Image 1 (cartoon, rainbow, N blue to C red):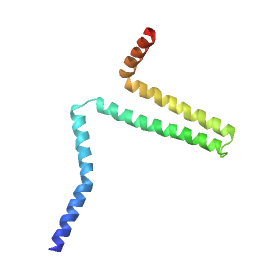
Image 2 (tube, one colour):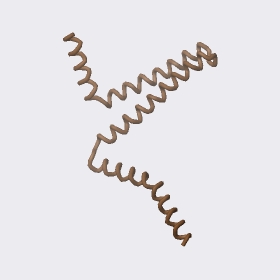
Image 3 (cartoon, rainbow, N blue to C red):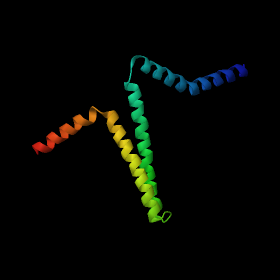
Image 4 (cartoon, rainbow, N blue to C red):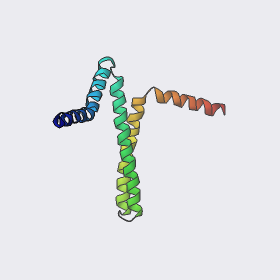
Length: 116
C-alpha cells in the first residue's frame, strides 16, 4: 500500500515538473501554425531587448570598475566605446523590428511639439 502511495506521489511530482515543458512546446507549435512572421518578430524583439539589458548592465559595471580603480582611463574608454557601439546597433535593430509602431509615435510627438 505504501509503495502505491509513493508511486502516485512520484508520478504527480514528475507531471508537475514536466508540465511547463509540454505546455510551452504546444503553445509555440500552435502559434507558428497559424501565425506567420509575427511570432518570430516578437521572439527576435525579446532576444534583442534581453541583449540590450545585458549590454547596459555591462556599461554600468564598467563605470563601477573604473570608479573603483580596477580599470585605467584608456581601458575604460576603449571598452565603453565598444559597448556603446554594440548598444547603438542593437537599438537600431530594435527600432527596425518595431517599424510601424515607432514612426507613428514619432509623428504624434512631433505634432504635439508643433502645437505647443
